[in-house]
Image 1: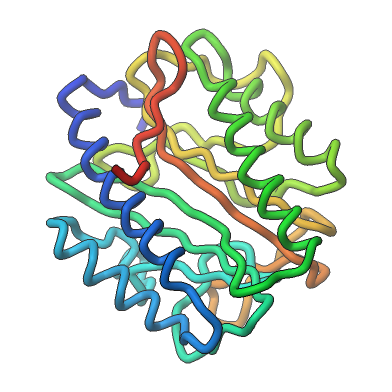
Image 2 (image 1 turned 120 degrees about the vertical axis):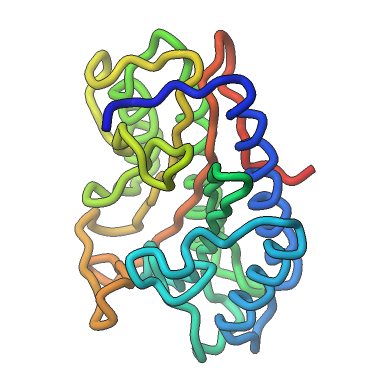
Length: 250
């Protein structure tokens, strides 16, 4: 496909789509509590997205049944919402995509249910900070390897591994565009970042091995050793200066 450079008008639409994503995730974070079933989060997310004029982009994507990915504890990404009841101490990753006027926004957060362990809280904080480090590195003139290396270096210095089999991605009219945006890399390598590129950075940090496995539902990706994982994501636009985060609640 090649990397698609977006116009200011197109980025403005993506900013509006991203605002829906950020707002819904923030609402879900506030509502999350022990005893909820994951399908309840999915239903709330879809209702909020549609009320704000968007379309949940995950629903039906390659057959995915939900509007929201809900991944719990050792689950990394692509968890299918259902009858699972969330417990005090669970670590939950929520991933949401929205289409608005033909363009996409995509973001994820990791949240604790009630009181969580110090280990889980530290993992969430490190994942959020690794995303911030990646965004701060993503400037015109840098390369994707610089971004991946920054995320990987931050995570591994704190004793975590970064998932290799799954990565961030370009985004625009399609949810997954070129380039692939891995969370590891070698400085100075990979595609050159240019103004107008829109990409989703999504570090997935594990407390144990970076290796993964796919569950029997053919969707849910978990850590290979059953250790905790956390996932954070933002859609950003490359500018002449600092990258603009498009998936923020306003």
